[in-house]
Length: 385
Image (tube, rainbow, N blue to C red; front, side, top):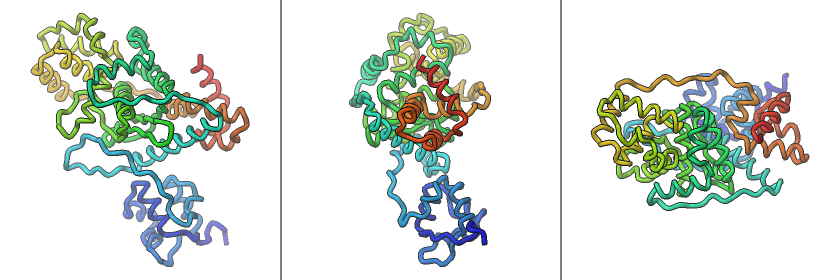
């Protein structure tokens, strides 16, 4: 008899916990394994084989050893749900969102542990109050050290994202890009332990990711972490006060009012909706933000009437979103850097270089085949300039 056909002695509560934390219903797994309900039944006699348990491990994205724990481990609850969803839409978290949260927490935990072992020190993120988002944004932008001239000189929005990410990581914030359905959440923040962390959806448009980056930074600065669907047009429901502040803060940091005033084409808009749209799109391209961010900033600066704002929003709603330029598939080394960021990857490489972790640890921490390690090292060296 093959060892993999032997029945696995596992606690049914572990099987139920692994499925539920993966965001899967019983019926979904039962399509693959008809006996899964029996396996999860308390005091039941039915058990999966080791081979079946290996398949469940792959489905639930849990290490096989996890299933042999005596009891389900205690995990932190999901971040507060700040998503601006219609009241009739379910707020359950899908498998992909849950997996992104688990990966983010694991990366955050590893980063904290490696930093302690390397005695690496990082600046503490300041805290702000929920008042005067324009002033708060100016102060934080000063800490980031990105002059408006640098922002306008970036080649494109992808270059801008990399620049903002590097500046934010220099402040001690871990920034991750993970696959996550945009309709369920464009980003979330975590502040457990000593490593504030921001996750943006790699499935989102690049300008939306940039906005989400600073929306989530506002959540961290307020010490109000959560799962969000940031909206640069700022909803006005009283219940959305925190989201309104974070949206306003993000827009103010990315497009300061002084910079808006310096753009003469924005302070004197033409009456023609078509010509006005051209200026908005040109300005959005210059600042490396979405057209909605520019639209909202002009309304706040009183360079646009509420009626003009609504007419433009209605026009864009009817036309739909412009087609996003899609890049080709990334090679594993580039994908690792894109998802985990230069700061985390550099820390893993440094720990490996000092003999604090093994090559096997590197492959586990970066989810990367060891044959790509040299390529990753070269990419990190290039980032450091």
